[in-house]
Image 1: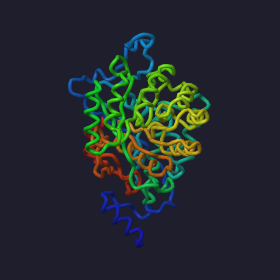
Image 2: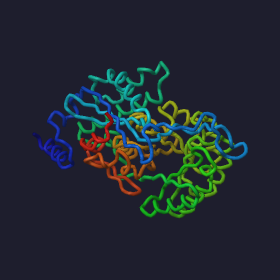
Image 3: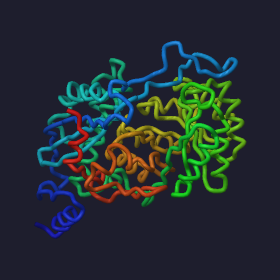
Image 4: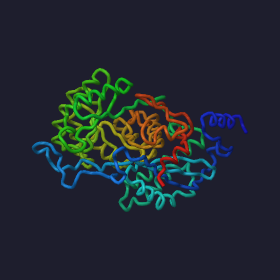
Length: 428
C-alpha cells in the first residue's frame, strides 16, 4: 500500500466510511455497473390521518373561493399527499463494490418511477462504466426522446440514477462531488426555511421564532389553494414587517394567479421592499406572462421547479421570464442541473435549487451544486434534516445548522446511511 492509499484508507475509517480496496482508490480503473436497485421510503401516516387518504385534490369544478372575478375555476392547485410521505432511493453497485446512492422525487408515485428505472433504464446502464456520467445521461435521455418524453416521471427516474453515479465516482476518486464539478466557491451555503400560519398575526409570530434561531431568509405561500385567507396579501406584509432590517421573505404562489391578478398583488409586495423573490406566480406554460411580470416588478421573479430539462429553461432565459431559477436536483439530476445553472449564469440569472421533502441524496446533491456554481445564492430546506428521512437514518450526517449548511468534505455526496434505521422506513 502506498502512502497516499494509506492516508485515504485512514480518512475513510475516521469518517465512518468503509475502507476501499486498492483498486477502488484508482479512478483510472473502470467502474462497471453491476446492479441498479430502488427502495421506496415511506413515513408513517400523520396522527389522525389514514394511509388510505394518501392522495387529495380539490373536487372537479371547484372554485378559488374568493370574491368577484377572482372566484374562478381553481387550476393552480396540485395533487397533495394526505397520509404518509414517500421518496424513492436509487442504489447502484459497481464491480469494485462501490455503492452510489441517488434519489428520485416521487412523493406520491414512487412505484411509477421505480418501474421506469427497472424496465427502461436499468437494462440501458447495466455494464456501463459509471465514470461516463454525461454519456450515460445522454443515452438515457435518448431512449424516448423521439417519442415525446423529456419531463415528469421520465426525468425523475434519470435523476435518481444520475445522482448515484456522481456519488460513485466521488467515492472511487476519494473526492467530494463538488470537486468533480469544478471545485467550490464557498465553504458553507445559506439556507432558508418555510414558515406557515393562517392569520397575519400567526404568520408574524412564526417568523419571529425562526428569526430568533438564525433564519434571516424565510419562505411562505400566498394563494396556494382555495379560500380567502390564503390569498390575503396582508399575511406577507406581516412577515415582511418582522424581517425588515434583518432579512427577506420569499413568496411562493404555485401558479395561483393570472397575469392581471399578479400585477395587482405584485404592487403590494413590491412596496414592502424586502420580498426576496416571488416564486411560480403563473401557470408554468405561461412564459410570455412571466416575462411581462418580470419586467413589471421590482422584486425578483423565481421559477424552475416545474421544469425538467435545459431546453425548457432555455426558453425561460431567452424570454427573460425570471431573475432567479430553482430547478429541482431530484427531478433533474446533478448533470442537467449543472448545465442549467451555467446557462442561467450566461444571462446573469441567479440559482437556488428547489429542495423539497426527501432524504440525504436529494439534499446533498443540491449542496454540492450550490458550492460549485458562481451564481448560487441560497438553498431551500434549512430544517429538512429534522423531518422524515433526515438525520435519523444517517450514520454520517450532512452538516446543517440554522441558517446555513457546510459543504461536505467526505468522498462522494458526503453522508452514510444507517442501514438498520433505513430498513425501518423502507416499504415492503
